[in-house]
Image (cartoon, rainbow, N blue to C red):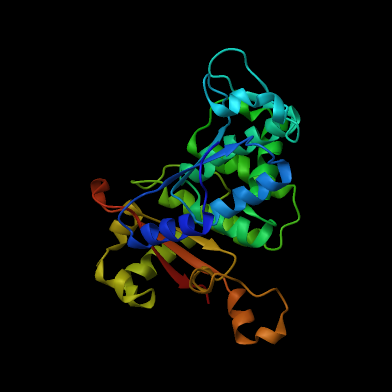
Length: 299
C-alpha cells in the first residue's frame, strides 16, 4: 500500500479527539490487505473498534488501475473484478468465503453500531456476553443471513425483534440485562412517546395507573431531577412511559458490571444488582428536547 502505519500514535490521536467531545470520528477499515487473513483481520477489527469511533466504515480492498498493489496483484494471489470498482474476490490468505463472511459483519455493523440505535445494548453484549466485538457482529451477521433478512426492509422495532430472536437462541449470562437495555435503547430512539412496543408489556393498566399517581405525588422518591420537572399525573400519562426491568440498571450504568447471581463474595453489591428497576422515560412536549430517563428501585 506504500503507506506508513503507526497504530499506537493513531490510537492516541483518535482517543484525544474523542475525549474532547467536539468531533464525531468515522474510521475506515479495509478488509483484504496483503497478508492479512481472517484471524488477523478479526484482531484488527477489535483493535479499531476498541477506539469507539462514532462510525466504523468497513470496506473491501479495490485494486484500482495504476496502483502499485494492482501491479503486484499476482505476488499476493489476488483475484478481483475486471471492471469498476475492481473489488477483490480473494487472495492467497483471504479466500472468497472469508470475504463473504466479513460482508455479513459489515451489514449488521452498519445497522446496529453506525446508526447508534442500541448503544447501551451493544456495549453490554460485546463486553459481557461475547468474546469480542467482532465475534458478536460475525455471529449476528451469520444468523441474519441464515434468516434471509438481508432481502427485506426493516422498521426500528424490527431491528429490536431481530436481535431478540438471535439472542434467544444463545445461552446468555444475563438475558434480563440484555433485554432491559434493549428496552431502554428503544425508548431513547423516539422523540415522542412511542405508540407501540415490541415486547409484552409487564404491567396491567391498573398497576400502571397506580404507579403514575404515585410518581406524580412523590416524585422526590425518584430523584431531585425528576421532582424538578413538576409533572402532574396527566403529564405522565401523556408524555411518559414506565417499565419494570429485571435488574438494577443504575448499578450497571454506574459500575459497568453486574455481579453473578448467588455471588456471596460481592455481598450487598451482588444483592443490589438483582433488584428490579422502574424505568421512567419522559418525552418533553412537541419533541422540544431529547427524552430523559429516570430510575427508581422497585421495593
